Image 1 (tube, rainbow, N blue to C red):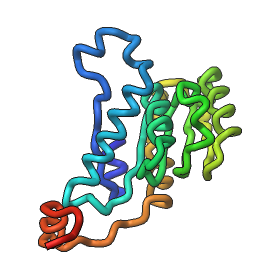
Image 2 (cartoon, rainbow, N blue to C red):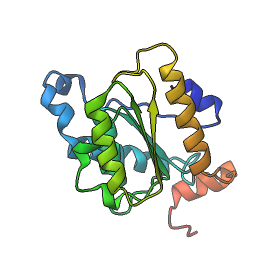
Image 3 (tube, rainbow, N blue to C red):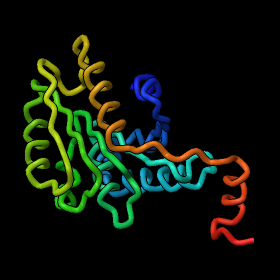
Length: 185
């Protein structure tokens, strides 16, 4: 997935939202506020880096991570330009769908009936630009031949359309801004 996004000119940052210790308790995968907080912290970190402080950011999440991405995108002051959910569990961010402002793409396998229903419900309540793409013959993990490639293509097209290129930053200007974020002497 990351290589397809990178080939489309998009930078990527892969996050494990749980520590190895936390992964031992399956319940932690459903602590959506905690996971969303970590996504929000990662987005803030990206915007503090001199080479990416003015770059638009998109969130890509799968399964419960997609629920956390939607939750994070709904946070007041979120600086996310687009969201892509793959086989996502938007039901885990229920009640927050109406406050997501970032254009949101929901991608679901046609054979993942329960998750497809969750995504149809979320789509009906999203107030932002959104789309639901159903990958024919795909199950929850998109293990069928060619299905992940379809997801990667759809995601890279969505991000390319909704994340405008950031203006080039002179490295000296970036160093000055990082040293003094207020822009003073």
